[in-house]
Length: 375
Ligand SMILES: *Cc1c(COP(=O)(O)O)cnc(C)c1O
Image 1 (cartoon, rainbow, N blue to C red):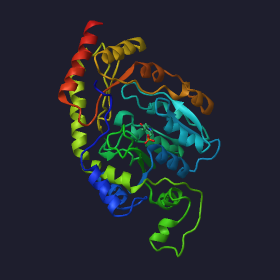
Image 2: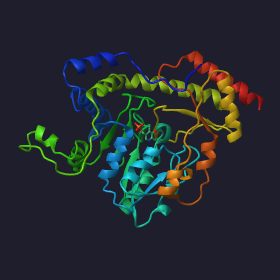
Image 3: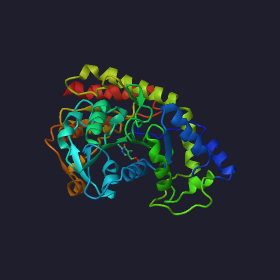
Image 4: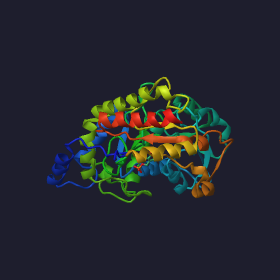
């Protein structure tokens, strides 16, 4: 059986975790946490990165740092994971879903402006599959209407838009290091803070509402409860695991891209039968996932069953949030749903992970050809 995903493992994870254990520092913000955040700050030219317990927790922090008030509105795509929406709902916002573009499955930047009301506070673009949203347009709209931008870059670690790392373009960027992502610490994530003025507030929010960070830096004589907060810091054990993978980030990225390109090249000849992902000019992606779009839902189900019968596990993706019970309760779809539902029904993801063998990729391509060659 070819699995859909195998969590990344580079081999040095246990050595680093042992080092963390032996140094008697396994709580949050130890030396491995510091190494991970420094690595990301340097690599992505990010003003400040903080590790969190998950991508969802990074989004929770971002929503709170945006200062959402009950009744504020947030514009986001419906084709996304519930965490993109939950963080804003928990902060009291109403959701306004905007349609996606069919080429990238990302929010359609040309439909955002019409969805803005006097209650709109935040735009939350999601970089689906690690491919950038049209950020120049989105940032220009945000500036024009004085809105904040939270990038859900959970899938986009190591991707760029016009040379800039995803996650560093909006006010806040959120990464995930869940085991299904390109780089992992089991469960974990990070928030990128792109304006220095939010750093202190973020430190307090992340450390249970206390000014412990300032205390450790010797800026205050004792630490105190100064604002609302929660605990968003992961154990240094998890950071040690992640550091092993960040050190191999280029190798992991190159290998994933090679697999992505092999699929993409091979599937060209079935264009017409299936639709392939599009990478817009100026975007460099991280091969987070490879998907094809079948003619319709029925064909997708038959293709997935065919692959499963031949020992290959494929996966569909999101049920659009606006058609789910919580989505209906907490938000509304603005304008026409031209692509969101239809294209999510047609989309299927193929196995793609660090370490997948060339033989397995070849087999998946052959079987896909056998299916589409006969319909
Ligand atoms: C994975 C993911 C999340 C959530 O990340 P966790 O680390 O699992 O909490 C949020 N948004 C998107 C688009 C994701 O793919």
